[in-house]
Structures are given as structure tokens and as C-alpha cells.
Image (cartoon, rainbow, N blue to C red; front, side):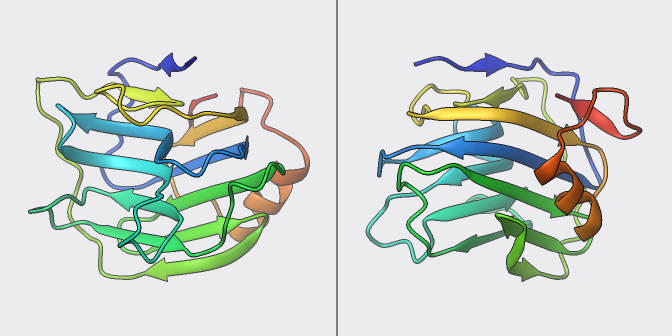
Length: 173
């Protein structure tokens, strides 16, 4: 039931990283980090997807919805197991990468469209989405949003030691 509205000032357009520790036993749809307009126009998100027709339980999305030109990647591992996991999604303006517990689990190349925001509502949320229909039912910790794609080595470092809040490129922590 608890979430954080990070506001509308995180307009990341050409690259980003979303990172968080999470722990849940809930198998339902849950957004960890999300930015969308009026529940339909996804800008970016990390989520657990429980839909039976989805081949992925853990998803990372950039600028992709029914008509979008972005991309979506994921991993079909049951992450709703009551254990702590570290997930990171990165996008460098071309390549999307998804890491779970420091291991690269999926990637997609050719995602080159900039994220375009509308005036409707493009707030970023931790633990929910704009419409409050996919709240995270569990624990999030050490969530961070970056304005560039973290490297593999940076992901390993932040998995073991969280950012201090003064790092270059850290848009939200």
C-alpha cells in the first residue's frame, strides 16, 4: 500500500538505469519503478508480471506500449519467492539490459527512440504506477534511478554497497 511519488522532474530521455532490491511473495502484477501517462503510455518500468500469457515474470520496459517504438525485455524466473533480489534495468540509447542478482538475464538492441513525455502526468513512482492498479506488495530497498546506463562493474559495486547520494548521474535515490 505504500509507495513514493518521485514527481515529474526525472525526464530521462536517451539513457537510464533503474535499480532496486526487492522482496515479495506476491505472485500478482507489481510495479517496482514506473513512469507512465494515464495508465497506458509506458515511459519506463521495472515490474513483476503475473499474466498467464506472459513468458516473463520480471520485466523491464522502455517507451513500449501497444503502439510504442520502444522495447521490453524480461526473465522467466519466479522472483516472488520471499527472498531478497537485486534487479537493474539499463538502457544506453540503443541496448536494453536486465540484470538479476548481478547476472545479465536478457538484452535487446536497436531501441533508439527517445522517451517523449506529455503534460498529462509523467511522474515516476517507486512501488506503484500512475493509476494505483499495480502496487508493489512487499519490500523495496536502496532504489535508485540514473540518467545513464550503469556498467556491469557499477552494478556489481552498487549491489554490494549502495550509492551515497552524491554520485554523478544519480537522478533519484
